[in-house]
Length: 356
Length: 56
View (cartoon, rainbow over the protein chains, first blue to last red):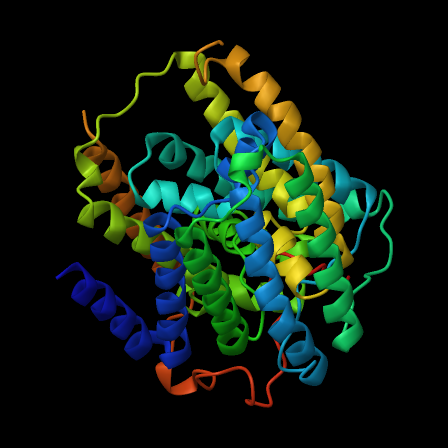
């Protein structure tokens, strides 16, 4: 019954806005079902590696990225007009923002996709963080040029077979380092993560082929914030970022024609389906101190703002950046992982978990 | 209180977003929609993505 309703929503989007947009909602739905149903995440596995030396979740992430890279990099190289990679410049603000994002991600225990998936599955922390994430993304986009003016290098993007080889070599080196550091009994991936990585790669490639751009999250959230600001009477179109042709078009058109918004809604919908099927709605809401809820709001704001300056979150920068050959994806990974280490150390003092 | 309340709140947030969008955005027109797949369409990618730094 739930699946029929979800298909009905996709059909309604297709008839209202166009077949491509209905299909993109389905892609997002598939991503949401995969992430929630197979418990595939980004923030949790990074924490598992840092705290328990359990690399399995990150290895699954690297596997999915590698699978996408093998197809996406040659595809973008051969069809550079129709398909765009997640190619962004490395810069001072970008590196600092990725570090902040990594820390904030460990406070909320969710990244961009994780916040949407958790919100869809009824996690109160994510539902509270989401509107602040949206606000932060909007503000970050509005201030983006000021930050990039602090110092930004030209875009570096690998292409062709050389790009695939270099990307796979980089992923293999990271995997070997993780396996070397790992606790011996946590070096083998469970079947669940093999399946999840393959499905995630398939849906990410579908996103690229259908939308013409890689899977992303943050752009859509910033757009939602811009729409809200417009509704409140703000002249958003006058701001540099939103005045750019591609963004001005998105601001004028419905979010039902924006690829990132559609996959974001699909992520929430997919998680909602799985949580309802598992009767997750019966779970009690955790009791947290007031300072924990305040931290969630601040961290949500920081997640949104920093991910905009960092040219993406775990999805837009780490997953899609690396898998489409962008150097900024690798730099983002290093900076955000360092930030995650700090976030994990700070987390107990903010009331977000019991002190050891 | 259970997660059912939170899931309902999330659904309301999405409904609110769609209503807000309908008030400030042009209505979508399915008859002017792009082809099903971007690949092979001959159309340039839009550039509205997290990683895109727009030109000034």
